[in-house]
Image 1: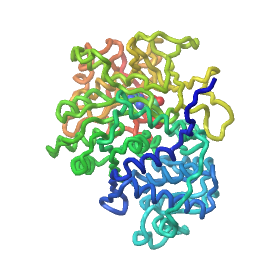
Image 2: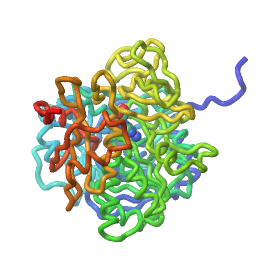
Image 3: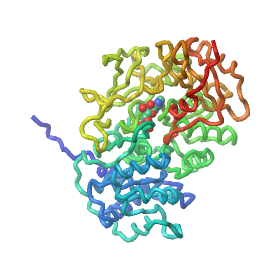
Image 4: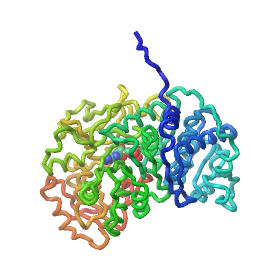
Length: 544
Ligand code: AMP
């Protein structure tokens, strides 16, 4: 017997309708490429999203077709999020930091019909355009008076396009499984793969992200997504904010600029900010140097890479800001786990609490996880056994865009193999020890590069650190610590290695330290171990 409850499809259009009726006056504040500060409301965003939907009709973009954005975080990008999705088209958010060949590959693979881009990306777009046969329209996200004077392309102005359209639009009734957003993984090897989100997955993910043990989002929050809107939809935060009516603050091109972030936080009363660890290093350095503070900031969501304890401590002890350490990936929309304490954990000793906080956290309802050993057997949740982390749930991809059936990363029961190696403890806290490809195997035993890096950055002379495995005759691989030293204090190598003593097993301690001016980063701001390994491919460790 079926229940007698309504079965309204779970669509982003429902989020939009609700937000418009219930908190349409909530503010959206942005720094944009063409204005120092722009203010509007959700009402304005949705009104302009209707104009945008009319633009898509006029441009001949059909339902199910993809249009691309190449833009920083601001209100126009938000209009694309809602306008394109709710019109039944798909928004492909392109990461401008990808290599040119990858950009060409993904825009062609997605067969993008139009490209909406920030004016700052004009030289990049011009350099790629003759390799993008499917793109019929190039739209600059700016107003007529800011349009470039000349270009090799036939450019269209976003504001002019919108201004010519009615703000009446009948949003279509969509099946909840209709695709709405497309994001490519920043694959370090091979071509990037497209993760095609659906309305249903987007709604469920955004809904669950609001839970108290996740982002704990409410109407009184002021949310600053510093994670780019091209990186897994800014972790879904624009959709979660719209569910609750939280005010949204967008940093535009000022993503890793500590001074701009501080002044936005202070001026707009930001309570929740989201970003990868490197962004917070920039903000914390600015706060240290300037003596400025972030009094309104209540919590930061830090994910995308392991968050070292030093960042959490500085936020908490100096600024009273709680860190929500979270794990996820493009394939998981991305929120998978969030580190929130369980009942009774307030009584933990400092040391036990520290060991807990560096973990990536507990599953959020909607995502299930397990760890699996070499023979494919599930491993115990004892905090010690580590294996391949597999997940499954309502907002995990079941394959990739343009590929039939499940991918090679999906097992026969539908679990997605994340490529991360992890432990899970008896309380359900998952901890990433490495990417499978970054694992260091010394004498047949695994060493966690992430744990070593966490200890290394706790040293006052270290700004950024990475540990990679290098060839060793006897042990097959041994860890090498590569360090960017803090501004004015290059630490002594022996002193640095001695600082690991007592924190990790002696045989885990790196064999050598190398100083570099900077570490290579991926398109999403993470340290690129692949490039680092290439850089140190011929490295000879000191003899024993
Ligand atoms: P992406 O799809 O670019 O978001 O990358 C996802 C990968 O980033 C994951 O598979 C992890 O390897 C890594 N990652 C994400 N969050 C964390 C975290 N909190 N700690 C360690 N690694 C993380």
